[in-house]
Image 1 (tube, rainbow, N blue to C red):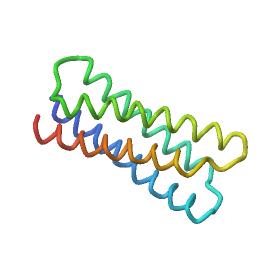
Image 2 (cartoon, rainbow, N blue to C red):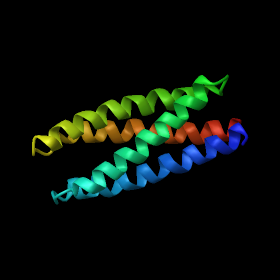
Image 3 (cartoon, rainbow, N blue to C red):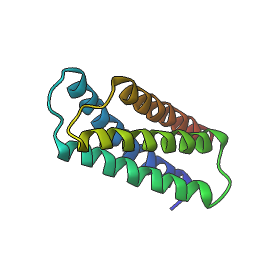
Image 4 (cartoon, helix red, strand yellow):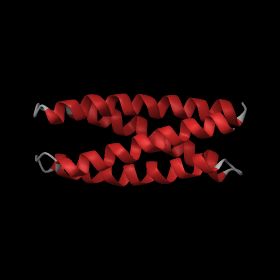
Length: 119
């Protein structure tokens, strides 16, 4: 498979994680309970996508937007870990933490899309 196809598949996987994250964010804003399964599915898709992106980036030279996307997704992963810690304690995470997590991931998604266009 070509690198462009693998980047495209990674983008689709991370897009699915972003859509699931949007649903979780909406539940959080409405102060509704967030199902643990939905959170774990979101995290699993995101972790798989970031691992695939890291493998692609570290396997050879990639466009700058793709490298920057990996950096932002890594930051989003750390933010998601903090959100998970709050959820495991039975408390809702602070709103700013959820927003920073989401903005880092969405910016990474846009940069990954830009990297696909440049590639």
